[in-house]
Every structure is written in C-alpha cells, then in structure tokens.
Length: 497
Image 1 (cartoon, one colour):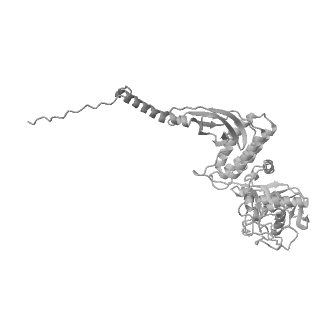
Image 2 (cartoon, one colour):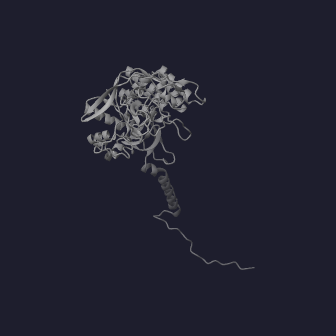
Image 3 (tube, helix red, strand yellow):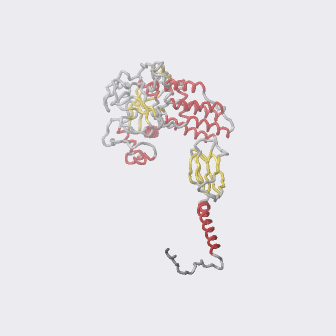
C-alpha cells in the first residue's frame, strides 16, 4: 500500500471584519445594495430622468391639429409621449382655434419604459363661428375639386374620406351654433357643389355615406339636385359597360352678326365685337360617358358683352409687364413662391415693346391672365375680364364657318367677327371646371355657389390650339387647366362690359 500523502500545515484564511461587522453580514448588505441599485437604475431612474406619459389626443372633429406648448405634435387621433408637468394644449383645424386647455401630466417613475402610463386628452369643448364653418367648408371644397382629377383608385392610391369627414364635422360643429338661414344655406350649398365634383365610384360611395350623416343630423341638403348628380355618377362610373343613354340638349345655331367695337387703353386700341344678350344652348347631345358629358348641352343666357377680335399678343403682354414689373420674367422665382405661376411662365418667350409682334402670348397662367385684365380695367376705366364659357361660346357660334387656325399666327381677311377662336392657342375662360355641373339641372346655380365660395379650382379653356387636330376640337370641346399652370399652347382673349 502506498503511504497517505501528508499535507503540510497551513494557516486558515479569514476575511477581516469591517468596523466590527462580520464578513457574512457586510457581504449580504453589499449584495442587497447592488440589487437595490440595479432596481433603481433599471426601474426608477428612467422615469425620474424622463418623466411623463403616453398621451392620446382625440376630437369629435376629424383631423384636428394639436399644439402642445406652442409645438405642433400631430393630428387627431394620435398618441405621443408628453413630459410630466403642466402644458398648454391647443386644438385647431385649418388655422381655426377650436379649444385651448391646460393639461396636467403626472410623473410616474416605476418601470415606465416597460409599462408606460397612459392618459387621454379630449377636445371636449369646441368654439366655432359661422365664418369659421365657411372657412372649413371652403377647404373641403378645394380638396374635393383637387381629388376629382383622379378617376381611378387602387390598393396603393386611396381616396381620403373627404365627404364623410366633412359631413361628420358639420354635424358636430353646427351643434355649437344656433340654427340660422345662413348656416343652413352654407351646408346645403356646399353639399350640392361637392356632388358636382364626383368623378369615380369611390367618390360617390363616400358621398353616399356623407348624405346619410347629414340626413341623420337634420342638416339641409338639396335632394333634387344632389339626387340627380348622385344618380348620374352611378351611371357614369359603374361597371355596367357602355353608355345606355344620351345626355344634353341639342346645340343652338346663332346666325346674327356682332357689332364692331373697340377698347381704348392709353395709346393702344383693342378691336372687338359687341354681342347682345341672348338665350341659347351651350354644348350639344353626347353619349352618357365620361368625359363626353362635360360638354353636354345646357341653356345659358349671358348678358351683353364685348370680346376682343384677336388673342392677347406678346406686345400687349410686354406693355403689361412694363407697367407691372412684378409679372416680369426676372421675378419668376417670387411668382412661383406666391403660387401665381409655375416654372414654365413665359418659357421661350421674351415679350418686348421694342419689336411689336401680334403673336399670341403663351405660357401664362390663369392668375396672370386675371392680373392682365385688372391692369386693363384700371387703365381703361372699363370692366375688363376673361370671358365666361357662355360668353366665349356665344362669340364662337358666329365663327363656325371660319377655317381652323392651324398656325400660331394667322391672317384673317374676314374682319366681321373674331379671329382664331378655333385653333391658335387654347383660351382661358373665367368659368371654373365643375365636372358634373351640366348634368344636375342646376348649371347656373352651381356656378353661382362656386363663385360664392371663391372656389380656386381648375379653369375651363376653349378653342384648341394649332397643334390639335380640327377633327378633335370643336366649339363644345371643354379643356381644364390649374390656375397657376402655364401651357405652351395656352393664351387668352379679353372681354369687357
């Protein structure tokens, strides 16, 4: 057998005492302190340093902007973290204050990062005036007009519920006001006009939801006109196939000749023709399909007016710029920033008074054309304006026997009526483009409502240009252009009282 190994004698290791405290005790205390520190650092410190709550902001009105202590935080309904303390909250829509309130957010500290505390702040007291409702409604109509340019939606491109949101807002906000004739007219007119902008099945579906909301809220709506428009929209934008009917009255033929006249502006004389008041059908009968129905025949009765014999020339525009440097090409960036024109304003055109030319002005916007008319009005002392679509059509009906102007500048030997109303350049009118306006049986009323709301939407252009085929363009053809858009083949012709 082996002998057992004999280990040497050693001194046992002993942990020293600290201030008379045995090692087992102070190790336990240190462990407890470390655990407590960890709990504090993880569970309490984040809440102490960054105290606050997840606050949900809500409002019975759709898409209300919320500002906290002067800083925009989002649109209702939404949730965001708000620091603990006292805060001033502002609820507003389209710049209109609906409510201001002081909100106290608590300071929870325990495991706030893991289980954040929540709080709800509601827009529970709304202050609004009839003027405020008019402003909100004007915004709604402008948005509907803009979205009407889109006629097809898919899973990636959605139509916002503009109609139903507006109707819900009116139901809520109108309760804050005493019933009045003005309030009823506001809601009824806006609803009627909005239906004239329906250009898809998607928009119509949303409009039907809005109609239900308005009816349940007891708000007025023109059931006759809007019922017709909604029915027309169903026929136009349903998946039933081709047209099943013809819409619009047959066009009128006017044979009487206008009387020569002129407009004097300083040393400049603008030749024109005067027309007596008349009642006629603007447009013609067309298959009930989109967009042919935008030219459907409707009765109109424009008052007497005069219209220029020719389109506004580059030379006349140069005189305008000379008196109004704001509209010069050198001021392009400011004009764009002000929303007056786009980047194509006067592109490739250099108006000058040094070398007079009768070439029609192009690449101008509707807003620029209006400014030109205002300048002529002030300089001549007459009411100069863009012709309405009805006035333009009234004049064009007398030139149907003239050849289509296939060049930018043509020489017309027949001086008994306006030149180049068909061809030349597309000409601005003062009439807003309301897609279904001719189909609701209330054409003049719809235009009047649009004027009441000062609706800043696309404007109708007429006559085609020299690059269009004469077989595609006629007196009834309706084009539309955004108010600030400048087109290479778009110009203007003036009218006056």
